[in-house]
Length: 135
Image (cartoon, rainbow, N blue to C red; front, side, top):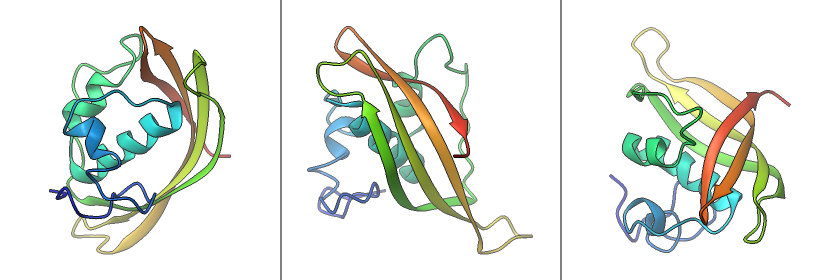
């Protein structure tokens, strides 16, 4: 579990409490698509499946989400963000998320997820719609 004063997993350099903890723990709404994407990465890194589901658009949200305990997320690099600002209704964020897999057969195997995610803002709340893998 990430403590309030620990560095946020999303890589901004801020503490968890100042950064993504505001959204995951305190229930505040992310003001931009990039802030939502960063908080969703943090949710993956900390195992907060419930947050992932409530920030997923109902049209594409799965009924159930089981996170892989053997996958440890270690770094997030935001490549670019298009639109997705506080006055936009849609936006995209391209990122690379780095992980390590410790599943017993591939101990320490490193990997990366390169995705361009699509977001919409409905009723003042940013929601993840879907993402395309690769550049």
